[in-house]
Every structure is written in structure tokens, then in C-alpha cells.
Length: 247
Image 1 (cartoon, rainbow, N blue to C red):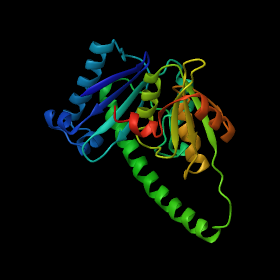
Image 2 (image 1 turned 90 degrees about the vertical axis):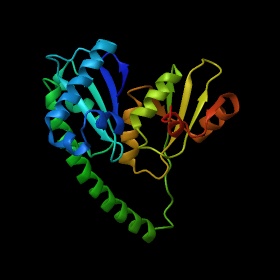
Image 3 (image 1 turned 135 degrees about the vertical axis):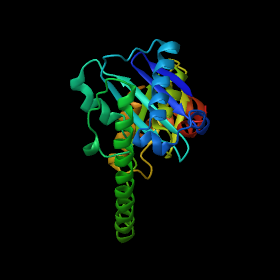
Image 4 (image 1 turned 45 degrees about the vertical axis):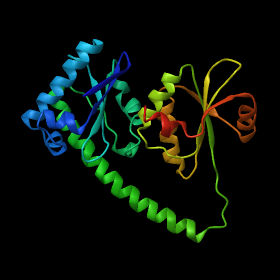
């Protein structure tokens, strides 16, 4: 069980196949809430408290459960001081389902994470089906209007530390695989991530930008600005988000 502290109010826990097997739990049991699954979540929160002093008693929590594959899952747990912010903040953490599906998640303890995980898994399955249908419709429209020029939006995100870029890459968890390049600005030492819309829809690209804005500051960018950065900046990676996720 790997637990990482993102900041004072947020942790990320990766549950691998080995973690699930050691607790004799599978993903289906996580979704439907067996006693073994509840014990696993209690152990997770207790470990977070011991390692990082992450106190979660009587504090509203926002949970994002991201099934990575059939054998592992990532849980992002966020303490929310102002419950009224739940709707807004949760929408930024959820690139895997439409904003219409996002809802505030307030938990009183680890046992209740089970119910939330089930809801998110069900919503993700519906979102995947809907996304596949949308992709098919988009493909058909693209074939019918192949002469229509495409638009490739560009955004620039600045980070003070490389660890912030790594955290952002893990926050996306492989959702974005489009064109992105990381430079180090020699003038101020900041890390500059140039992000292209690529094949993503404006809505999907906006969700990616929302997540990255949790870790760095973003703004609109241009091809001319990117050319200047290529000439005067230090190239770190031509596919940073994909590579840094592996760290």
C-alpha cells in the first residue's frame, strides 16, 4: 500500500494487486463493501495518520476513486475545510466522468468510502459507455467534414519545482496522452509545461487544464511563445506527462 502526501489536506493511496491479496480483497468487494474491504480502508487511513499526521476524524472528505485496471485502484482523499466548496473542487478532480455526474462527497469515516467507491465505479462505467458513443459520433462527423480545419489550443503551465510537475502528472493518471513538452526557464528557474489540445475535445482539454491548475499556474499560450521557449529554455522532456507518471 503506497500512500503519498500531496499537500496538508490531500493524500493519494495506490492499492496494488499485492495489497488487495494481502487483505484477501478484490475490486468487486471494494465496490460492494465486505468487512475485509472496510478493514483495508481503516488500515489505509490509520497508516496515513501515522506517516503524515493526516487526521480525518469529523472532517468532510472528498474521495476520488480511479480504477487503474482490473487489479489496482488509486484513491485520492482530500480534506475540505468549507463543505460549500465541494461541488466546485470535486469537478476539477474528475476527468473520468462528466461534471453533471459530479456530486459532493462528505464522509464521516473510512467505512463510508465503500459506498462512494461503488457510486464512482458505476458512474465511470456509464461515462465510458457514453464517451465511446460520443467518439463514434465525432468520428462520423469528422469523416463528413474532413476539409474543416482543426483547432489546436495551447496552454502554458508554470511550476516552481519538478516535484509539482510529477504530482500533476500523477493527478492526471494517464488520462492525457496528447502533445506536451516540459522546459526549464533559464531566466527564473521555473518549469514550463506546454500543453497542446491535440485530439481532445474542448471539454476534455478543459478538464485536463482544471487538474493541472491545482498544481501550477496556467495561461493561454501561442506557437510564437513556444518557439521562443524552445530557443531559450532547457528541454526536459518532449512527453513529460507520460514519462513522469512512471516515477
